[in-house]
Length: 115
Image 1 (tube, one colour):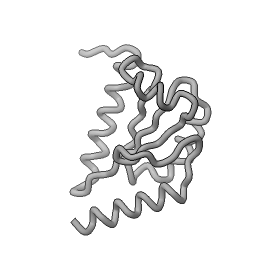
Image 2 (cartoon, rainbow, N blue to C red):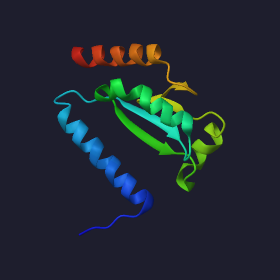
Image 3 (cartoon, rainbow, N blue to C red):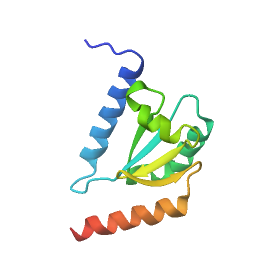
Image 4 (cartoon, rainbow, N blue to C red):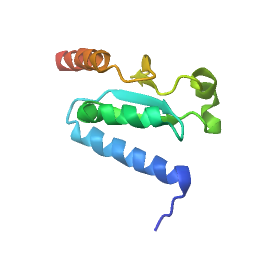
């Protein structure tokens, strides 16, 4: 039996969730929406609630900017979280812009159906 503590358990849960969602995505690979966050972050919690209706259209990856291995992101975004990247490209910050998110998701979905 394996025991996980703290961030390791969260990382294990996230990795397993990503695995399950990718498996259920059939032949289409879902885009990755990265949320740069910290704990606590009430705006991040609010943003995740706004994202719930879209949850089957992307894989949500959370990056805790306060961890030592994320110091570059901390320096860049410490005053701006939540910050979102879609497939590694900056998308939005501070609040979820649903029209911008929808537009970018549709664009990616149309590209994947053409492939």
